[in-house]
Length: 241
Image 1: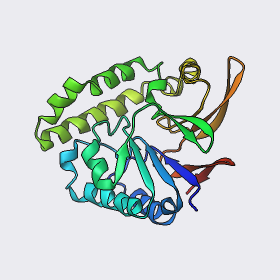
Image 2: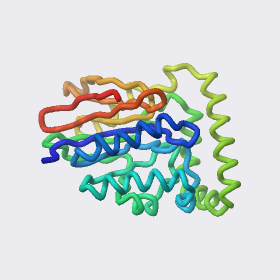
Image 3: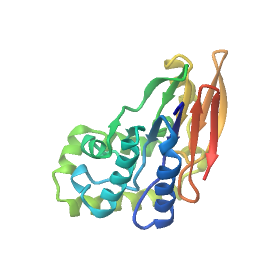
């Protein structure tokens, strides 16, 4: 019986990174098919210009690979990240998946667990939080999606270039989660276990909040090797590919 769930995040898939794409496809075919559920906690793609671009060959190949896993009985749940904030229900439908909100609390084999992408925890990065508010604004999204695909792609690549330049001027601490933000969200959700990505700093942390020990798992990015978190009733295990 499939009595475990798998969590991944920050794959940043793109045609320009064929080795990681191959790693991901092998992961789906050999590992994900053995799970009860597969959770993608944001940034599946390096960027996403809208669901009307999913017939592009590379995008179609990824949705087909996910659909094959879903067809094997694996429940797939997709969360938007900061790179693919425009990922929508049409793409999820084609994958045989469901979109779910950030944050979400679920009962994971008897343990209440809070799932997030993780970027909202980086509250010290004020400039990023301002851009995030802009990117998540429904009116701004409608205006952006009304533009031709070619223009959208050009603008997103421009945003990416600006973001990479800005990172060079920021300290690593500013781009990591703020401890106070982590404590606030754990407190607000009754001291649950937390799983998130975004920071590219995979680790297991224990936070003591108001006397309550809380476990926090940070998922790895897939820029070099990739990895995932396997959760079952007996506990959680970080696996590097």
